[in-house]
Amino acid sequence: MSIRVDDAALWSAIEVALGSAARDGALPPREVVQWAGVARYAAHRPDDPRAARSAVLRTLFLGSGVAALEDAANSSADDPADHDRLLKAAGRLLAAHVRVEAGQEVPGWSGSAALVAPELLALCVRWYDEDAAAAAPLLEVFTGHGADPVEAPEAPYSLVSRLEDWLAERVGTHVTVESATVISGGFSRLMLDVRWSGGDRAERCIVRIEQGGMFATDGAREVAVMRVLAAAGFAVPQVIWEEPDLAVLGEPFFVMERVDGAARLDDAGLDDVLRAVRDLHSLPSDVVAAVAAVDGLPAGSTPEAVIDAQVEHWRRVYRASSPQPVPLLERAMAWLRCHLHPTGPSVVVHGDPGPGNALHDGSGITAVIDWEFTHAGDAAEDWSYLALIRGRRIMTPAEWKARLERSVGVTYDEDTWTAWEAFNGVKGSCVNLTALTVFGASQHPTPDHLAIGVAVHLRFLGRVVDLTGARR
Image 1 (spheres, rainbow, N blue to C red):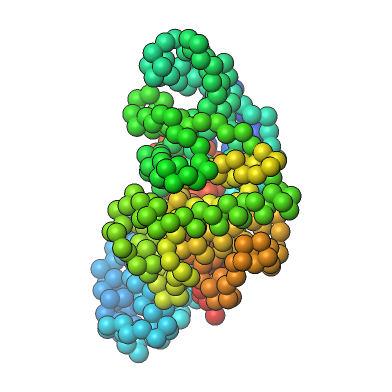
Image 2: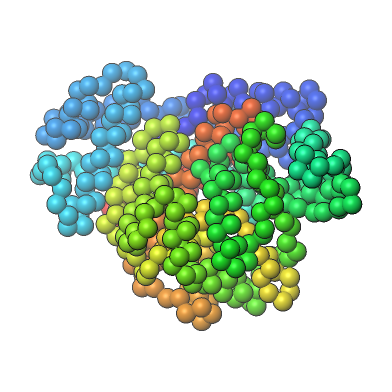
């Protein structure tokens, strides 16, 4: 199951980056240090385990008495497709085993399958542990959301020049960009804080630029959601312009108003954030339907159907991004189908809630930002992500649960918390795999792309392994 960038591609990226840094100083010092860490990881990581693991699976499957497994083993050859066939068969068996354990009928399930499944699961968990240990050095080079803040760098001159020309076309006069600084934060967008002037106008705005499909999100969808929410009166920045043409800045982007405010982590500020999320979840059903329509969900979809659509969305993201099948993810998605249930009617889900995505001016929330993951779904998705994943740097899950009950009246039983934490773990595992696609396709891959696509993906998957009972 090893999620692995091939040696040739990895060393090529390292040599290009460090060679460029040595030749013309094109990389900032922090990134040079990161690439040096990646080089150490590449030099010391274990040999590719896939061939040896294929041999183990073939031995387990042959003579198992399970037709699908024997077919996968018998059709094997010494090529990459061999490993994929075996992993696909393993994923199907583990998914079926979960359904049987949940009391569902699975056509074709047999006593032989029941004997093989626990041994296969133990193998996959052991291999996961080996892969996580091998990838651990990548976490040391990962910038992450918890990194110490650095002085905001200026955007590259070539990017600023092209942005000036584009703005001039929008306003019909010569434009000068006075400053364009990079806003630190997540990895799905390059965000610029831009001051510009032209004619009798002097304005400040935020430019959000896509990053090669990172996290399987796109700006056009984000803009559509923001416009729905703005029309409903929710506190979102106004979208000013949208540009789908890659020829302008190299990626699609949009421009939105800059709203004053900053993250606030004191008790009053945190309670304001919780109330803002609660208010989002309280938007009327016609707004929920409009957000659902952005993703093509039929009007009147049941909460169960809305949840199923989300699980299927992340399955598609994983399969499009992963270099090979991941049996433990296939098992986890089957587990979600058995254990994930609506906690109420469908609502507008932010998808990445937290203090960092709420701007506060001292008297209240001025705007909620970063809407790329927003969709119609279950409120528990937001609350579990905030309390059990994103919010851990601020307080413990138990403290968050107490605050949620006290501040906004949100409470769930432990099985519900577990199921929705597992959903968010699956989501995180899948979404981080997209960084591998970016790493492989980008002309300027970064250590963060590699770390996210391998080590951060595995960290999320490990939590899912624990939550879904894969360790026996």
